[in-house]
Length: 81
Length: 81
Length: 167
Length: 167
Image 1 (cartoon, rainbow over the protein chains, first blue to last red):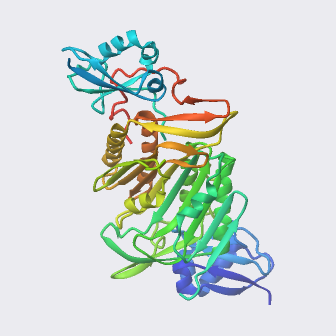
Image 2: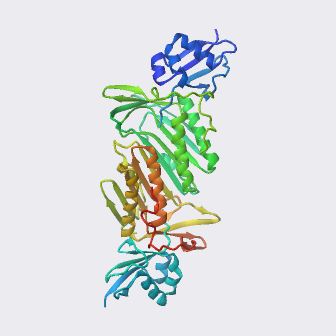
Image 3: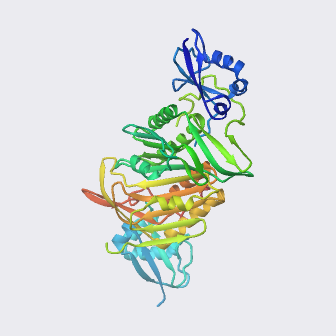
């Protein structure tokens, strides 16, 4: 089965796990991935409105179509500096 | 004879001398002092329009009346920093 | 910890690093100082003890490290679009920090001072907006990830666009 | 020179110094860093090699020293009227400086970053406006006191008033 790798950070990463593999299918977008994740992890649904999203370390919109093997980051509000 | 001490700086100090004593009389203002100095030192007259002026290390207007023993500074445009 | 991690990217004009070891600002200053520069601005973000009524005992920073370094470099490029001779160095600390520690050091060298101030300010504002680094505050009575309680904002583009704000 | 001169004023919140020895910015940073601070801004003015077509070989700074220190302290008070918890340190070098040397170092520590940036910027702008320090540029083909060729401005009040500009 082809997958994407998901990275989660900060409070969300502590609650859900910092890294997971998720099944990939043709046409899967970031938005679709977040919805699927939210079914299994309610915390993802709670954080979803505030998340920034990146694919392979570049910010990408929710409508972005994923490819197998992509690294998808769910980025809660940042607080560096 | 009572005097004031005059301090001169930068280009003006190099040309005229960095320090001098000048006769004081009741009612002498900074403006009056600069005029008197200009008669003997034409450079003071040339610099006069650009000078800031201080008495005892505090900026004072040209109309300021000097007292005997005051330290008067003729301050060309500053260029620190 | 036994080994302190450090990741960095260095170009001919920029130096970006993440490290668990304390930050020494002087190498950053030296990196951005050149005979063609007349000004260096340095910003240090330090760990403040009190935020309102709450006393911070210590902080822990974590980062999406590879992306944080790439994003810092992109922010440096924003500064150089405004001031093409600028040199830029940014080091952010990770792991546990105590009150008074330097969390981030930014140094910007430019020929003239306005650009140094503006570049340094731009970098810290952009870090707080878009660099994937997070801070967990630890108090006597608990801890939280800063940002978890922030008002909700949505990012239809995935994140702040690089062109959102000019330096 | 055999003995290097240094003059300074120190208060509970401010440190102002003039010295012929090279400036080390780190003691200034340490002076302004406190647990109640979250931000330190440092500005370094360095000797630039090229100004337009002209190559600087070295500079010489002189000061009306006692007044320069008093004026720096007054400028520090301006910063603290805006940001009452600010701590301020300013060191200016005198005598001969080479290209790349730090001529002035300013450090401002404040609880929040905007005040640190604004305080540091205010101090350098006020130094250039009103602190009695002068710079003589030395080139291959001559030398001049910067300011001697500036456009003419008159100061009916003797100098810029302390209230001319708020930080």
